Figure (cartoon, rainbow, N blue to C red):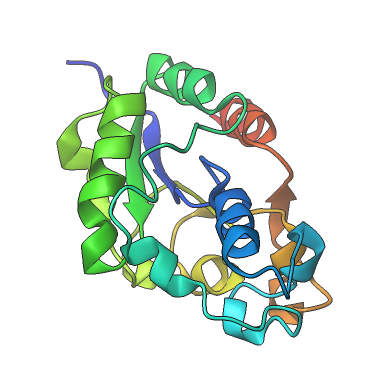
Length: 185
């Protein structure tokens, strides 16, 4: 058995798939009086976004909400490339109890080449550790103990809104993350 070059821990929502895209579509279908767009998601927590007037977190409790999402561009190929280069991949995703099954099934469907044992449903990402960590939540990145902590850039995690994230490496897509890992490996 070949030795691993390192452990890569990946968030799922809005790192591997466009979860907020589905939130926006669902919200707009249900609230004709308060349409939103990506620019309205200015903070990681929806309740902190002034233009979002209705609760949205209950969407994640709906059976099937997560199942029909597609992986973001280049994600499947990028993870295969990391695996081919001998990196261990761990999916670290936070979800409500009701969304756990959908999330696990989604990961298994799109990444059948990764062991189910590498799926970690966890809200406390500060306690997981590895060589590389990619997340779009600045709190998760800032408080994590991984060697290389990277923020997946998004409208809701800017340095202006989260000054504590200043100085952390950021990538705007998964391909850039893979390139970064392989360049340091």
